[in-house]
Structures are given as C-alpha cells and as structure tokens.
View (cartoon, rainbow, N blue to C red):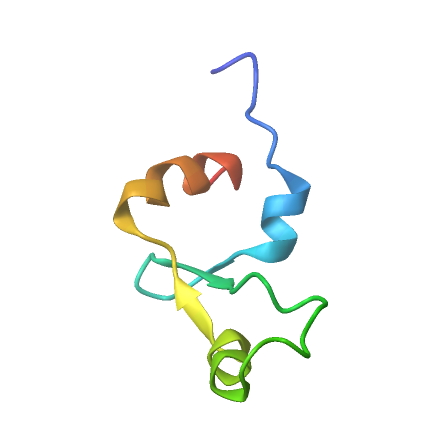
Length: 66
C-alpha cells in the first residue's frame, strides 16, 4: 500500500469537468471584463465550453488526481 496520496488541486477541480469519454471540459478565458471592445461574435464564442487538448490532458488529469 502506498504511503502518500496525491492531493487534488482544488482550483483545477472547480474549473474542469471530466466527461464520460474521459476528456476534460473547460470554460474559455477572456470573458471577465473589458467586453465593450470585443465583438458580439467573439463574446458568443467565449460562452461555449471547449475540450482540453491532448497535449495538456495528462497534466490536467494528474492535477485533478484522477
């Protein structure tokens, strides 16, 4: 039995969600403030969530301790 357990990064767990197929879903950045200079089309796109790339997947799963 292992002595130490990996702690999950609580900030990452609150921001990321694991999908049924094992991918990680996240919300897009740049939607917090200074929205007057951003085009409506860009703001609509920022509303939608997206899937984390395969390059970052292993690192994010480790931070979520999954």
